[in-house]
Amino acid sequence: MEANGLLYTHEELDAEAAKLLAIAEKKGASTWQMRVKQQTPHCKFGEDGVCCRICTMGPCRITKKAPRGICGCDVHGIVGRNFLRFTAGGSATHSDHGREICHTLYCASPDGAYRVKDEAKLRAISKRWGIEDADTKETYALAHELALMGLEEYGKVFGTQKWCLDASPDRIKAWDEAGIMPRAVDREVSTALHMTHMGCSSLPEALVRQALRCGLSDGWGGSMTGTQFSDIMFGTPMPMDTEANLGVIKEDYVNILVHGHDPSLSEKIVEYAENKELVAMAHEVGAKGINIAGVCCTANEVAMRHGIPMAGNFLQQENCVLTGAIEAVVVDIQCIFPALGPLSKCFHTHFITTSNIARMPDSEFIHFSPENADKNAYDIVKMAIENFKNRDKEAVYIPQMKRNCTVGYSCEGIIKQLDTVTNSQVDETGTYQPLIDCITSGVLRGAVALVGCNNPKVRHDRGHIDLMKKMLANDIICVLSGCSAQAAARYGLMSKEAKAICGDGLKRVCTLADIPPVLHMGSCVDISRMMNLVCDVAKQWGITTPELPVMGCAPEYMSEKAVSIGNYVVSTGIDTFLGVVPYTNGSTEVTELLTSGIRDWVGAAYVFEPDIEKLGDMMIERIEEKRRALGI
Ligand code: BF8
Ligand code: SF4
Image 1 (cartoon, helix red, strand yellow):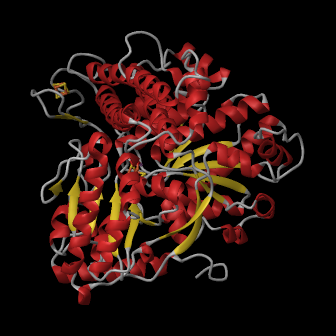
Image 2 (tube, helix red, strand yellow):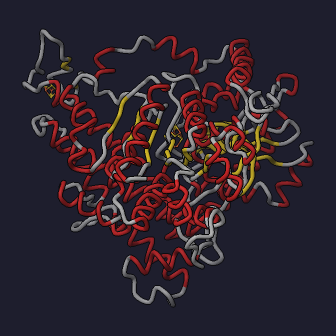
Image 3 (tube, rainbow, N blue to C red):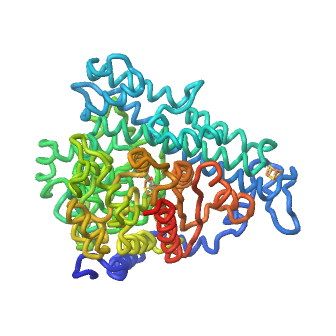
């Protein structure tokens, strides 16, 4: 272990994974490590984005000898169209998650399955959105009105996204001038699909512009709704302690994994795990109780609101089942390996799918709906309990490795905590001024939003961890979400003691503010929180967002959602560093636009760099460059 036993090393965690892999081999189960071998090397045409199959005259693949598709489209048009479609997939997906949350809020009632927990937030948003009598209206009448308004945002006929009103003035101006102010999500996704239909757009500039706009409709639309409306119902996260890594699975308990994204499901499972009748039932079958552990973004959602431990991130999902100690994996939507079906069949594990959006073979389907949430959750937990007797106790192997972490730094949580750093200009309601003071004085050099997935193209979690360590040593604070957050947590970087590996400035800030050096801001839809954070800091500082010494980075991303995020982060004025190239290498024109040209529209651009060491150096250099430009 490093830093006096504070952090796990890569080797320690790799050794843990290797043992589980050996179990898989013995059982004849397929794992992602095996499938990667079967799938590599990847198709070069696909990798470069130069294959087009959007009409049945193709597929057309661009080579030196065949520079155009049958319709005459060149490589730049093909790569640009693929990039836009990729973005649209991500934007639609995130936004549909937000739409489900609107629906849940619409079903909320004082004595029903879902209630309003953060009434102040409900009233504040309602007021900003122009609902009459937002201060005095009966809570649930107001919640339903806001939920309906939220739902209507998705398909509104005229105008642009209401959340954009919260952005800094420089953003609104930039988006207006670039013609990328996002309209309704459904409109932007449809426009993207229309533009990329055979015989429509093949001009890279138009395709990239729409990709930014479509991304913005996610970050400043659907994702923002998902985040803010979840806070209204389930509470705005505040710092709390929990644990991470496979060691949170408990041998003597009924173990239920919650995996996916939509907290409507996981919140209820967490609630029913404490139900007296069900706990008694668990005791009857010989278990000490019911243990819930999270995987992927669901883990982030329930960790930051209830302190539920996080078993692992995207590339840990199979490892969880391989412990042989999981009675049920309960999933909703997104980032769920279809492999979990066949894998769970090698054990006693129930693989329970719950959403019409994510149906999979070899799963047991229990349709979960807000209207039947209580019964659904009860049935699911009961199913897991009844399965405890089927566990092959001899075959259980739970690596005893876990780390403490502090999670749940929403914007509100950060303001509350950072206010303790300096005494300068602190007012009663709290502001970002202490954070700004730390940056202008140089105690902190800047900040990096480290986000996104795992991808076997980068060794599991190493991109995240190596970058974080580098940033921390250079007094750059990190804000995290998604699978990046769980990587930090399981290595130990999200504990307050991890300040030991920071530069002197960041160490001092962590001590004074009593925070870990990497701040958990939530799930991937919560990157919208980061957008609020940068805009509010810029407003308070009196500068524009592109002037901030702040970077965005997804070193191991894999999903369409991540590319949609990249597009709204960059459009929010934050240079965005990706460790995996988004299938754009085939076009010099598209690459030039994304890595440079779009700077003219939004004041920021992408860097694609698979060498993680270099990527880190470039981020630090960029932060220092921004500081010099500000004269700080
Ligand atoms: O939305 S970071 S692997 S879990 S896509 Fe998925 Fe990527 Fe993880 Fe959450 Ni985000
Ligand atoms: Fe080929 Fe053009 Fe059809 Fe694409 S749209 S498959 S490039 S003919």
